[in-house]
Length: 128
Image (cartoon, rainbow, N blue to C red):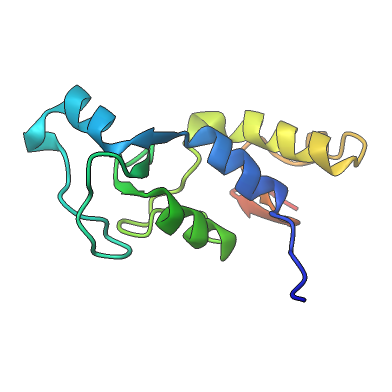
């Protein structure tokens, strides 16, 4: 029996940060001119009841399962334009939540505020 690998904390937080919505709900809110026709990961067209995720920074849209699989491979950027999932203004809050979930006592304060922690690695312009 294959062993189920738990999702990293960063993937869980990103999935919380990128809520799931139905494509038809997006289509109703943005209008036909502003909606893509297909997912850039799988290249299949979007259909009304399908679950999607819309990235906050770049606004690109993907099937939920396509983007979730992308994130499970430790990807932290948009598959289409490579924009970071977490906007600059949210990195500090994101780091605090990751450190709190790790159980390590207040190590976050030792790093600069523009550093983002993902699965044990620190990214950003900070000094380590």
